[in-house]
Length: 113
Length: 114
Image (cartoon, rainbow over all chains, first blue to last red; front, side, top):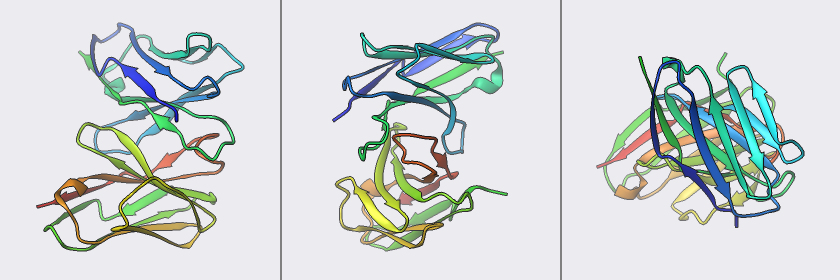
């Protein structure tokens, strides 16, 4: 089955700096890569996703890049703000398959004021 | 209006007891899930139901029994609770399968087994 590794497990940045979280996956057939943000005491929420037919996707301060050859994808947050502090999860799956989404182990991001 | 709601938010109980967690979604989705999040924040799928039918059971002990009375509800009953069952349990739903589209999670139910 799919295996998703996520690094780092914790990340502290100064407000206004950028943050990068990296994930690798094992199954070359995977083609859907969402990122979820989990705030304290809440359930995870989708913030951005990318499919394997594109290499990069942006949404305001958030961007995701995908390198299918190397089987890794990354989340980039620019101009970080205190409200970006949360646990971030990457995930991977094969679109339309019965096999479920495989999550990474999560990254606790802390934005220091 | 809460899209995916689960109750209770907190449960504290003794080993050996039986407990239930209820989940309801008002999004009109066909697929619902139960996930377990352990103390290290790792998210693991337990069950997936599509239109009231079980489609995924990820080697969960049979002390855990999901029940879907209709496609808007997916409840989780746990028998003979063990210490290792302590975790946060999340209900989720999706329009398409989780492998394809967005998952909508509830706020979680924190279970503590003493």
